[in-house]
Length: 293
Ligand SMILES: NC(=O)c1ccc[n+]([C@@H]2O[C@H](COP(=O)([O-])OP(=O)(O)OC[C@H]3O[C@@H](n4cnc5c(N)ncnc54)[C@H](OP(=O)(O)O)[C@@H]3O)[C@@H](O)[C@H]2O)c1
Image (tube, rainbow, N blue to C red; front, top):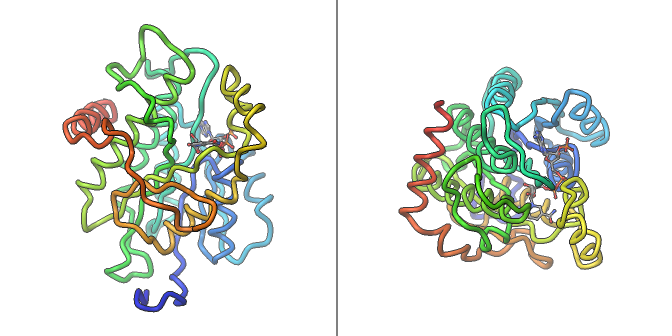
């Protein structure tokens, strides 16, 4: 890619977008395919993924539905296997977008609290399991492959997780915020470890009008209903994700806040806890232990 010419068209590549059946993920998948990328459209089931790819319509790029429920390690492994088969030449970009919140505490088959399982452990598992097939975009050495993690400004309200099962006092907001804090710390740890090989970004979409709050139920549903008029459409943060995927304007390891005026978003300082190196190491080590279990 000609990095000196801002009008040069970035080369198309292949991207996996998780949670591409609705909201921000759907907009990201459709926009990347509109630019000629091959997009692996992930959904919880084959039906949902196929239906989302069909809704993306007639786009110049390719659309390949892939499916897995991301609550468990076996689901994550299932998706990794499919991606290896569907993208034999590798992936240029992994967008870890799938996310959830729940109105009551529940454990997965792996014995992990569900919010933490989907928002952090699945995203980490995919990053870990797909690292080997993240390949330079356009085959050029200066266009490194990219990992984009969808984060949330709510990470700043979180308490650090001490046990993946989140025993003790549980609230929807606490589980959600803590899962995003752990994931952000892990993202920074990956940026450090993958330096000069794979670019790593965290994108905070802001408050977005999607089905997220409704599916979450509980207090988040109410916040979604009351706050809807103030929220942005999913297309806006999708533009920031697409800009980061195709022509990143910020350095690897950045926390990028989607903003109204600038598609590339603005880099921002996340919480002090998320930037604490010792905490990042602890989260990274505990996550790797879980993934290898
Ligand atoms: N909306 C906001 O205000 C906001 C703010 C900050 C951060 N975020 C983050 O942005 C990301 C996208 O959210 P969104 O607002 O676009 O919400 P959304 O429309 O509800 O999309 C979430 C996606 O994740 C998928 N997903 C959830 N649990 C899954 C599971 N166990 N297995 C497989 N797929 C699963 C959903 O699939 P199904 O359709 O099958 O459920 C859906 O495709 C999330 O990571 C969220 O935490 C959102």
